[in-house]
Amino acid sequence: MNVSGLLGYFATFAIAAGAYSIASLGLNVQFGYTGLYNFGIAAFFATGAYVEGIITGGPSMEHLGGFDLPVLVGVIAAMVVSAILAYIIGIPTLRLKGEFLGISSLGIAETIRLIITNEKWLAGGVWGLGDIPRPLGNLVGPKTYNWVYLGLVLAVVGIIYFLVQKIVKSPWGRVLKAIREDEGVAAAMGKNVYKYKMQSLILGSVIMAVGGAFYAHYVGYLSPESFRPLMGTFIIWAMLMAGGKGNNKGAILGAFVVWGVWTFTEFFVNYLPSGLASRAGYINAIFIAILFQVLIRIRPQGILGGE
Image 1: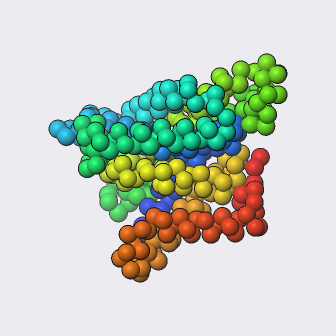
Image 2: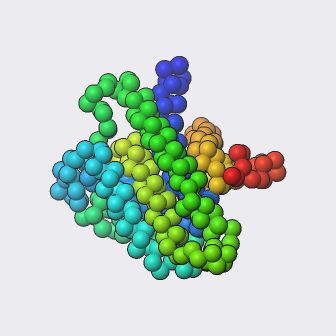
Image 3: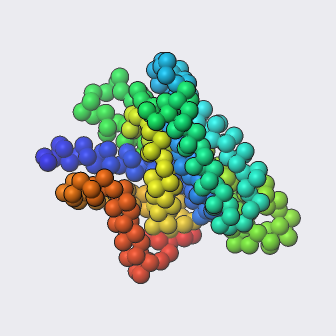
């Protein structure tokens, strides 16, 4: 591979890592600062991606949408739909504790994925949703497009990082940390724990949807298989825990590190027998597990640690 090819590969790698780092920041709001065990990340990441694809994609007789609207309109729509979904999910689940919340959210996320899979009219069903446009694609050439889009994604990452930093350092953010440490104490201080947890769930889910929206434009084609628990939930949890929960810089760094390990193992998969290569996702997960074994021994609090 020549230098140009390596640079192009780095750009595509960084775009995906940037989209995942946005989702990791959303999870950090929910778990890192509030202590919410959300194992349904895939639901909000997929919602952002599919709503973006439906709003910005061209006309289609096969599924809903094809409105061909601007990217910004799609992102706003993805945020609104994700906020509504988070509110609906939060009503019955946020009164549950710890792992029960996690199990419930995982089940709901899988239900949403199966609906997307089986309802062709909604988003193409098992055939997926394609023809998702490339933002700014008509302004730049194909050789420079990935770099321009990378700049856009990194700018969004920076904006969200700045906003989340401001929010978690505000009085509202301090209440979230109090809830994370001890819900009973927070309630004794007169704080409406359920209300704050709902706000945290909605905010984090909206951020995840933004990540999903930019991921949609990166891949150009969406399949329900892309949002199964391994890719839509597990990997984002791995990113946050690797970087350090409760640390926004760690959430971003962890996304790049874990995605780097994930994509690096693709080179090995290409040399494996076909029977093993068909299980590439699980082989990648094994390498992520090895990474965590190393981190547990030398840096159990994550690369940057918690705040």
